[in-house]
Figure 1 (cartoon, rainbow, N blue to C red):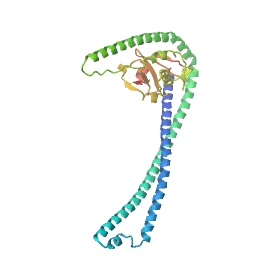
Figure 2: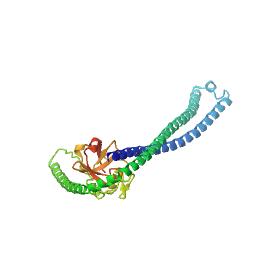
Figure 3: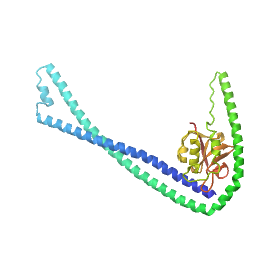
Figure 4: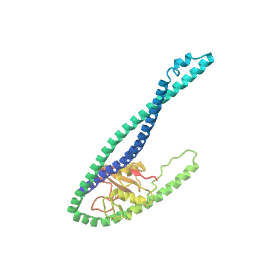
Length: 326
């Protein structure tokens, strides 16, 4: 069974890579589209500014010395006329500088967008390769899982049947424990509120988990078969199970462990509360903590939604936990 769990963890990590590459690819494709539009606009503006510069150069050339700076200044007939002519020369010069700067600016914009497009095309090609590799690994690992499952199907069925009574006992114990914890939390909050109103100082109280109720929802699906990619009562994989259960309380979670790891806030193992998400095997597996060092999850191909203890392999591969905050 450990081999099945490890295979599913490896499959989940490949899926994480596939979805992460897909998300990044969408971002790059959007950026490519924006840069292509910006490049076309910069090229149009560059051609327009180049035409304006050429027209200005032709005007200066065909006007001979009448418009030259020296001719303008020497043609002054008084001090006032000289000042006016100097201002006119400055104005003409600043216009020429502006035309030149416009050409330079649009030429630079064209270069910048060309470089950006080249970089993004390389990133796009790399991500397409990553996605293809991840997809290939998913297919290969699914085939290995099917072969392994076929060879141990009878043993798995026997183990599931033997554990049904124990699972029911664990579920009842978890329900009793969660009810007691909920009452204790309500009492603690009430006492904290009374203490805060009587105190003149600032009191900071870490809020408890808002979603302890998801444990009761998760328990309804004990015995539901594991289905890779499943996210409904017809069959769940580990992240699909977590997403579905939280969806029942109006919280939308993504359907892969890598993204679920980025939700909510981190929680230390000593501070775990029912409803927290617990992660294992390098984010290859996820479940919902139910208290008493136990969690409910969809383990692997051939198994069903069950309660397990964070011990043995799960303790050895424990990554961390996240508390969903809203």
